[in-house]
Image (tube, rainbow, N blue to C red; front, side):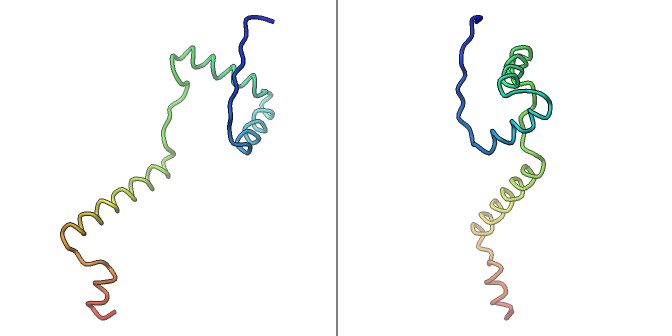
Length: 91
């Protein structure tokens, strides 16, 4: 055997099964896919794809960050909560 080494990876069982199912459909084993990934890292000088949050996740995170900032501002400025406002209005 050529000058080889072993890569050991721990991962979620379901992730492994799902990925291996997809890989088998395109005719690749896990070993071949990992070798392909490493070769692309070598050729690209880094990851061969862009890492970013899916748009929906990014939008949700931004929304929650904005809501949190608004709540902090409301607390700092002494605004009434929705429940307090309804109570004051008799609703």
